[in-house]
Image (cartoon, rainbow, N blue to C red; front, side, top):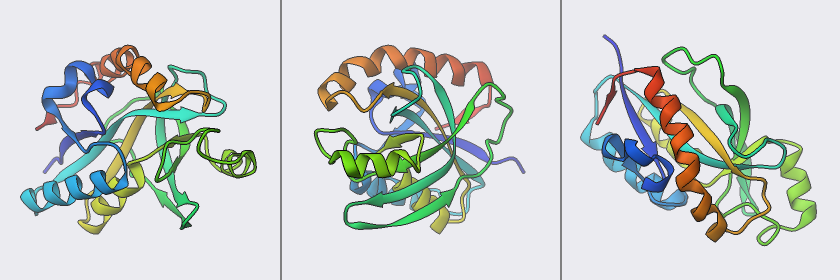
Length: 187
């Protein structure tokens, strides 16, 4: 039996016209955890695959670059580093660059972290978000495969307000990519 693919994103602006078939977590680990646990309890035992889509900051990838997240590093100033290997995508999508994602408990930028701390995480990861570690962990606890496609929204050089302005335009490219896959997403 083929797994149902369910889309998850932090906020509707990240997914544009896919909003009606996407589950939204809200921004941050706590919101993502709560939303994912509720979803998993409602769909317990159903064959499924979680596909997290949305934006991520990157220190070296150009804005608009599409990435397949192959590994998540869960860390933060008060967290022990933990590496998580994502499941392969349940469909073919060869044009995506593979990346390691650092999932933080806050927006990754020079306004939040010291330059020394940023240099340390830049050496380990290609991109950054605030929900992936929580989504992955809950999916793993329920034995559900998790994968992720992200679009680079910034180069760690903007505030969250600037991110909010950019995300609507970037969502169009992400939506086009997902729609062209014709993968039969379930809500």
